[in-house]
Amino acid sequence: QMQVVESGGGLVKPGGSLRLSCAASGFTFSDYYMTWIRQAPGKGLEWVSYISSSSSHTNYADSVKGRFTISRDNAKNSVSLQMNSLRADDTAVYYCARTSAVAATRWFDPWGQGTLVTVSS
Amino acid sequence: QSALTQPASVSGSPGQSITISCTGTSSDVGAYNYVSWYQQHPGKAPKLMIYDVSNRPSGVSNRFSGSKSGNTASLTISGLQAEDEADYYCTSYTSSSPPVVFGGGTKLTVL
Image 1: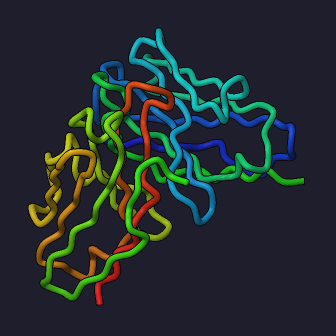
Image 2: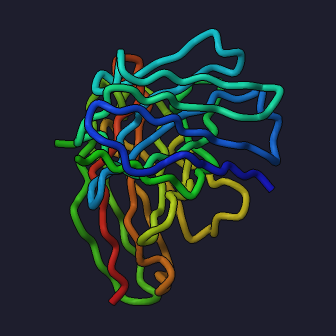
């Protein structure tokens, strides 16, 4: 069955860096865009970034632009999110999800279990 | 403030039907048939329930249905069951930035 599994979360100090990874299985990874979505504690969902199937196109939320970088490795069926200059308001559970190659934010399925990033001194 | 407006909470008794609304604008919900709905149980990842306004992914119960009229999309759950108690989020594709807008979420309570 289709599955994505995130890893790499943890506690980091403000200004620090963290790299999240997402391993995909059960579908043809190279056919789909991949996206990261986050959810702050007790809050709603916020789209963070997506990457096209060939890595030729990326897009970022204004709140992370210039600080976060998304990348993928189709040979390893994985997508990563490099997060630099982290701030307290980046604290959230980060979800990886497969998304459509047509209208890249049309739907998100499946989602991983999420990985918690806590930015605190 | 979320870009799409959902009621904060709805409730219903087992066996009843409920509808959750999701109101956007002519730039998102009203412009594209790319509305999706997600169910999230506490401490769990969201699950896709409806995509492209009214399509159900394989494995999702046919008690869940979606529709759209103008700038408002709706999720209807018929034959409410205790397991349906969860948070529900709507999203819509947009051609602007950001390329997707989310609703603030609706907490469904099964009485």
